[in-house]
Image (cartoon, rainbow, N blue to C red; front, side, top):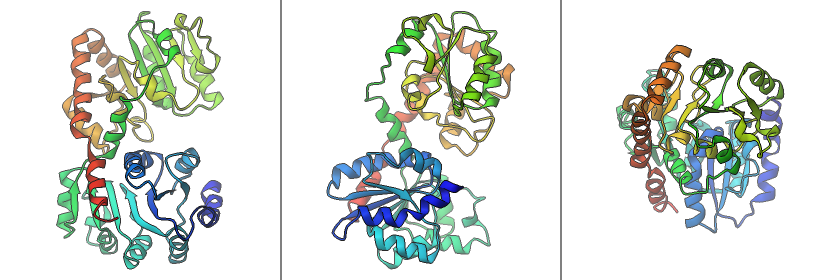
Length: 386
C-alpha cells in the first residue's frame, strides 16, 4: 500500500522530466505484470514501426511497476494516478499521448472520457467479457458508457464480441490473446542453461513453476515416494528464505537450492529448488512434464510458457476464467487435478505411456501456433490512427 501511494506522487515529476513538448507519445496502460506481458508484443511492434515515438507504460499495481520500472521495452514507466478528474487532467497534460492502449480489463471512466474529449484515439486489447460483469447488468449504464468511449475493442473470443453487441457496442474485433504471440517468440530465442543439462542428465524431468504451499504439499508427497529415475525442479512463487528452507526440509530426496548448487556435482541431486527469479521460462524448455501452480490458491499462473514447448501441463482445479486453460483442458493438453491422489494417477498415466506425453504436448504447441497473431491485427488497426 505504501508503494501504491508514494509511487503515484512521483508520476508527474517522471513525466515532466521524460516527455518534452515536441515528443510523440504512445501510451499503454497495464494493471500489473500479466497485462504488461500481454502488451509486450504490441510494444515491440510499435517500437519497430514507430521508432520516432516514445513508449509510455503505466501500471496500476506495485507488483507490476516494481518489477518493470527499469524495462528497456519502454521509454517511460510510471504509475497511473487514481481516476479522478484532477489527476486525469494533470496526467494527460504531462503525457500528451497521440494514442492510448488499455490492456484487458482496464476501464477507467474519467480517463476514457477525457481521451474522447481530446480526440486521442483509444483502444482496448486482449479484452475478455463475461455476462456477470457490470457492463451487462441493468444497473451498469455508467460503465457501459465508458466502454463506448473506445475507438475499437479487440476481444479474445466470440462470446465477448456477442456480449458487446448485446449492449449495442459493435466496434469490436476478435483478435485472440496477445500473450500467444509473446510465448511464441520464446521458441525463437536461446533457452539453453548449462546447469539444467547437467542436472537433468538425460533423465525424465518434472518442472513445477510458480508454486504455492498448497501445490507444494501435493508435489512433495509425490516426490518423497517417486522412483529414483525421476528429476524434479520446483520454482516457488515466493522465494522468501524461510519459505524456501521449509520446502527444502520437507523433501526426503537429495535436494539442492539453486543459490547453493555446484555445477560439478549437480547431476547427483534428485530435486533442484529455484530460489531466484527470471529463469523459469528457460527451465521449462528442459521439462518432460510441467506443473503450473496457483490452481489451489490465489489464481492460476501462466500455463502458456510451458505449453509452448510442447509438453503436458498439470494444474490445480481452479482454472475457470483463464481462457487458455479452459480451452486446453477441453482439448486434453492441460490436465487438471483435485488432490494428491489424482496428481499421482495423472503422472502415472503419462510416465507409463511416452506416446501420451507426446500427444498431450502436441495439443498444447498446436493451440499456441494456431491462435497467435493478435498483435499483427492490432498494429494493422493502429496504422489507421497514427
